[in-house]
Image 1: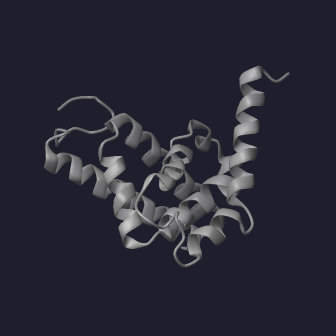
Image 2 (image 1 turned 180 degrees about the vertical axis):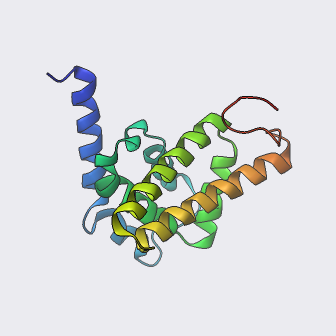
Length: 154
């Protein structure tokens, strides 16, 4: 049977899917003068969804991770820079988990499609924002360079 944690996780992911599907968030982000496109707190929900550990499960890739990456990749330059600035303040292990999620998504996607499609491009753009965030943290001295996210030496 399912545990209470399993049921809660399913509810969270169904809610994320409902938010991201159809014309909901996608329409908001692509309309002119959308508050989600402006720099500000209204973008933070994207970061919260990206930090969800359930995204490691491939069954959540297409309904949740794909539209989430597409939304983040489609942000205007200023909004994307704000997301990278926020990520630059996150602890290294949290960023590393998102990188693992995206790498897994890319591996599964490329294995199944055998081509670079819009989903691969979007996930790669999100990885680029994570790279920018890490570089900003290194430049600001918030993180030491030369150490891998695995914590095994340095």
